[in-house]
Length: 229
Image (spheres, rainbow, N blue to C red):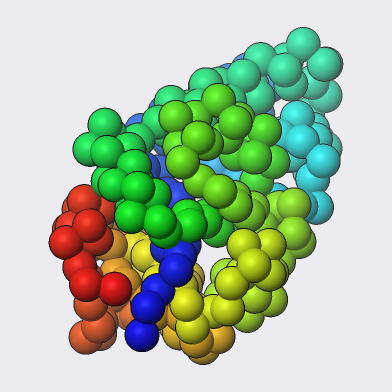
């Protein structure tokens, strides 16, 4: 069956995962900026992640303000802006891929494949994505916070295909297996491919889908260029 498109996950697939070691440093900087105790700030960051990914915060500043309200801390606009700036800087750097990834995407496009992206993320990612080197290769980027739908809901995969003007069975979906994204892709008719990644320092290291995976898998994105599809 000819595949016309490749749709990718973002973190852990096209770019590195958020590592706890690196992002906990950012959490500490943000907590200090708004004078919220670190343990409370870290806990509320985790508790607000779901809502952030579903677009229930208009901006990251809105999320920080909500955390301050929940903890009973008054922070002025300058403090909130400073805290958000730490996160924006981290995300901007995080969505810059390795050159070999860009080379692989270029090869896929040269072969005539359309390239899509589905990312479960908060507002900073779509805000900063146009400045990422990935933007010139991805034909259709789709972000959960803008769609108010997360993986593995079938709707987010189907909506991406509709925008790409292709059918799900014409797509390969590549992801690191977070939050049952590969199962979700398969359920709508896509061919899922696991992108193996280091899970020793991520927030969701226990991924049953990855641990039991028996389908096609790659260690590097460039391996897709040698697959027959």
